Image 1: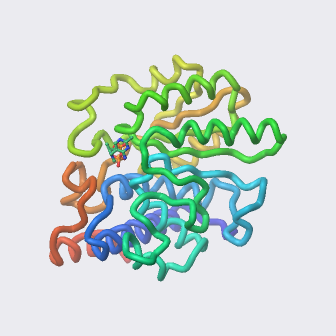
Image 2: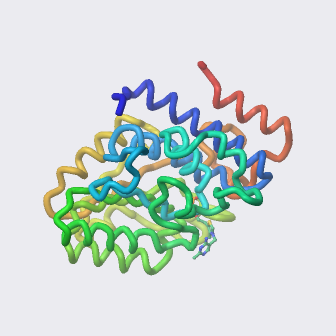
Length: 275
Ligand SMILES: Cc1ncc(C[n+]2csc(CCOP(=O)(O)OP(=O)(O)O)c2C)c(N)n1
């Protein structure tokens, strides 16, 4: 794969964000907020850190990615298409009849490892894949992106316990800590005090970063790859709706597209700054 520097990665993140906006506006539905907050993380994973090859999507040694917060499908689909897993033209079919690109992440889409959408399940699947990698003596890593609303689900904590038990140092969970869930702020719906300490107390290696700083995301993943015994949990502080002024930190855009042609144009123009 081409070697991308941080300037390239920032540009690619903006391309992905624009595609997210185009997809949800064209579909008149979908989830922009948590796709935009995750765009920089997805870019670093797919364009720098993961061992993947769109020409060999079934390579047994490939790294695995699970979008556990499966409603953020626009973010993942845009990333997969820009990375070359399928033609970018497919994106215009998002959430439409006869398209493979359903509203939640679906395994029928090239590059997708696991169907998701029912929150809380992806980390458990990741534990299983990481354990299988150990048993099969494979060197792949498993990356799982979870939401901060999602980690209110009890089965997330069962997965956290199991990963510790099996010393899954090949498992890297990334928390998109945007502080908003479906219809409000996590602090009001289910406060999550001091997530890093909570996770560390379960025996994980924990790294806290700015989830929009590509350098920090790269360093965190590199550090996670060095972990000898423990699984790693990266707490990535992000802004829901990042990059579009009226969507930023606004729960309304968890699951709503731009409301008008004017909002659509504003979003695209803000995401085109400097290009
Ligand atoms: C088991 C389950 N319960 C409820 C929902 C409905 N739902 C979809 S998204 C969402 C909020 C998710 O918040 P978060 O994990 O913080 O995602 P993000 O803000 O990153 O988009 C909820 C409750 C679901 N998809 N699955």
